[in-house]
Amino acid sequence: MSMGGGSSRGVKSDINVTPLVDVCLVLLIIFMVVTPMLQKGKDVTLPKSHRIDTEAKGSEPLIVSITKDHKVWLDKDAVTDQQLQDGIAGAPEKHVLLKGDSSLTYGDVRRVLKIAEDAKARGVELAVEQVKDK
Image (cartoon, rainbow, N blue to C red; front, side, top):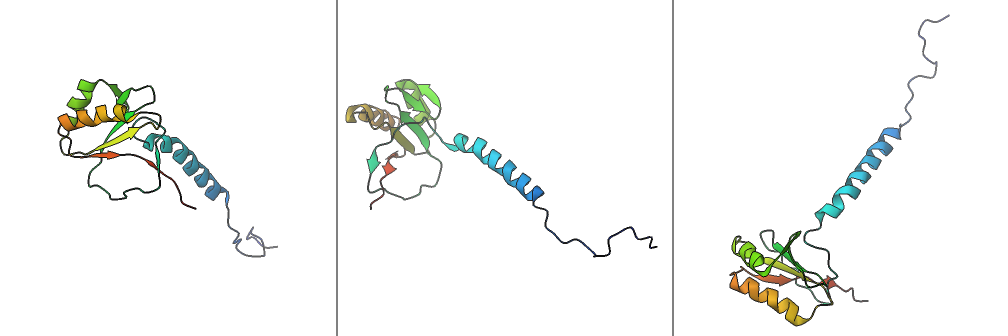
């Protein structure tokens, strides 16, 4: 009678995948929670374009959004024209990324472009959604 208490086959070398599955599920949940928070500015339907400029700027831009109900948003805050001008003037080193809803007229967007010009914005970029060519 042996006193070892172990099996006679030796060390069990099977991989236990349960901790791996647990870690993957936790990471999936974290990404599902964090991803919606990564979007900056107000959610709008962007106009579509076949060609886009992919030049990267150095710093993070100020996100200005114009929704289809003609409200102007600076990041996630609804602002008046004067508040927008003050917000852009308060960050002269940043450029402006303008996200206008595709249902807006040029005049709606031009009004915000004029405010950015008056606030001496470093530059204004228009956000578009790229259409894939077939």
